[in-house]
Image 1 (tube, rainbow, N blue to C red):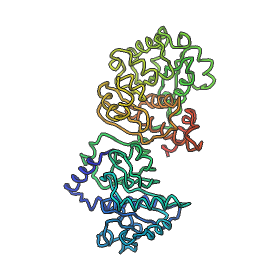
Image 2: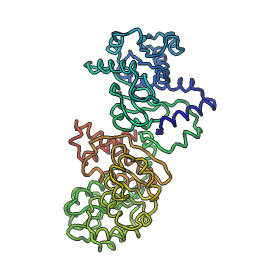
Image 3: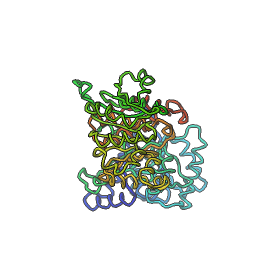
Image 4: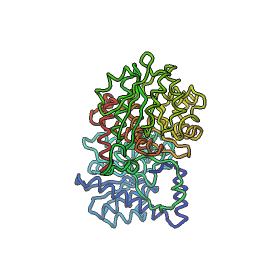
Length: 516
């Protein structure tokens, strides 16, 4: 799914109209696609009554087209028109298909609106589109406010589908009107508008689905957009094929330098994640005292026992480590390694000599920040996985500057360093040196727990070990990680209790869903 600003989407539609795809046809395609999604959702529920809240703009037109299709298929379809007249051609088509229409101007006390909301099983929110500016005008605000009141009072409210965006969301900034109705699903047309993946708007979006408006496959202005939103279809297409005649060597070896006496679990989480994502073999290079603790917990791993100082990797561990590099197909370092200077000596030597696809996480990033020209010493196109604090150490920017401009910061430094940047956090940003970006459409406190970054790094190195390129491995790993976090919270019934190991356990289910 492409990510666009409001201005970009308007320009694309204008160009499409000028090149043989009229606005009316785009609206027909959008409305038909919306109706198909309604039918898919309603199939198991045996729903049959739908209400559209219809405003004066194109979103209202999309909604009317969808209602007409639904009416023709046997739905009891009604439209509540706000600042839209009955002589509108799309309204006429709905009436001809057997639908019903109510004018807001004739419903001063909102009795009709209340009755429609209470009887509907699905509500299409098509009052306002992507171009609104806050605050809302009084008439629209009153309809939304009353609808919100009625819906909140209902024991079993209808399923709410926002058409392109929830009415009252600024689709550039992510600001939200007080009267905005939270959606169960937002069906966005052609591309995801950037404000939907910002807070507080994201809290009103619900699930996200995309409808094709008919743009041709070779439509350059659309295809040249460099920012995407990850989804199941995209990520499923990135995962490596697992042929029946495969052997462990087919899926590569992930070599992971991780852990210290203070952070024993980091190595275990990263190594298990690499296995769970499909790596054929995982070798864990850890300070020698950790082996006795970890070996029984991951019997599938092989081990490189590194010389240590007080439980941290020693600068003298280089030769021992390098003797095992030739067997690996990807390399991760950093999780739980701690901030001891001898460990930095080890890292500085290793990054200059290891010629493998590389992933750097956690303490590895903080050590890099102290190494001159580190980005030139890393094997080309490494994957860096900083959170805001680690990005601050690497760039010198404050965490506040980074959080306020996440996409811009990730993109700038990916280009400057020549490596893939995975800027973790709400709506994780993956940026490549070419300017390509992917946003993970997840913001959840389920992922705000120690150890979750170790899992993510392990997933990415496991995919790199199997041969995925750096950017694809980063996108797929980050998406699977985020979805596993959501699933773990759903299974536990709370985000507060999710542990990194719960996310790791849920990776299996997400992988299974993607492979179906």
